[in-house]
Length: 243
Ligand code: MG
Image 1 (cartoon, rainbow, N blue to C red):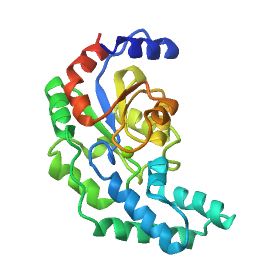
Image 2: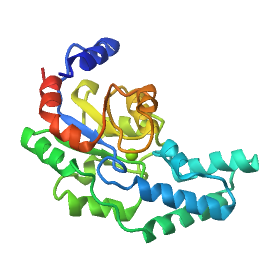
Image 3: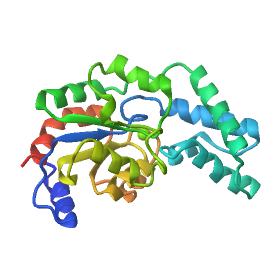
Image 4: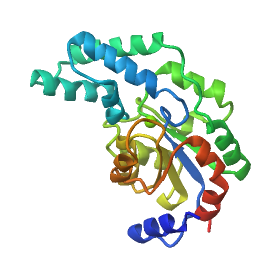
């Protein structure tokens, strides 16, 4: 069912076959329905500073480090880099607002998918740009005994962050994987770009308001519309990736 997408990927990378052993998951907008809160928090914090930053723009920056996002808007509106003090202050405002919002629920379909992976003996690896302690703790609450600390890449592991391929290359290393042994699940354009540049077969799940074409243009090899859909079609995808 996914043979055409798989074969196109194999040909372009010079691989003979996929031997799926691990799935590398982004967190916000994939495992948790948290992007609405991030967009709201960014919009409110930027507005307090006097920046023009519509909520929809947050989805285009998703995956970037907080200081990276702040610097881009500073250059746009102040025509200069933000100072370290400004970056820290604005990011703290954003985090405080984020933490005051109702906590995000797990994405529908995510737990069902993770349980299927477990039954199939496929290893889940987390690759997030987030350094939010509250969300990392919540992983264990909502997805118990699923993600192990040695198989997590967070804001604390990376120097560059998405869209640089670095976070996914660290995930590849932590999982001791060849590229044809893993696939990535991402919802954000910058995350898709990072994963496909790293060389992984990248599944985009479009759980936000962006057009599908933005995710395809970022390098997605396959596009689905929800984690529920990925869970429902998992058996077909797994079979295809182990042939
Ligand atoms: Mg995401």
